[in-house]
Image (cartoon, rainbow, N blue to C red; front, top):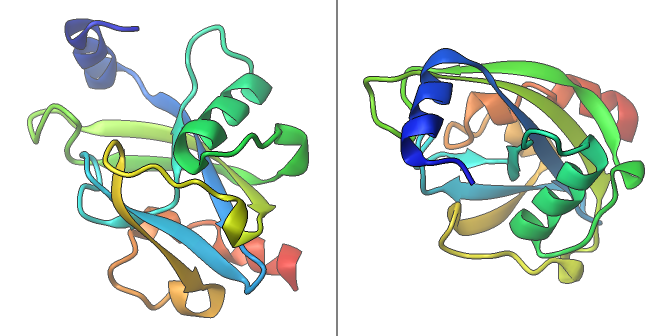
Length: 156
């Protein structure tokens, strides 16, 4: 676990690498959580999380799926949609430090009743949004829409 001071220095000086979980259910709906923390605080956003140093992608994917969705999900069950850059004017430390994420977005399907969505740590609410409605929904953060064109080619 990084100290707050060290993480502050890292966020201030380096990009963070993360995995986005693009979770689609049996009704072709995308799972979104309402973010509690900056950056993107208050926005509807796909679940995800940072990859830690010396953590292989497969282990990170399983850990993130467990903590964000309450289920064990293997990287082999997902499809990489692409790697995207996210630039924010703020960070978990406030508006004085920006955040730069490099996100590997991974798509997979679930049955809605399989998930055990945790409340209160990263998100205070969840919702499913029809894929056809995501693009035009102004409450969904634009970084949770960057993969839509690629996702449509896979699903259709």
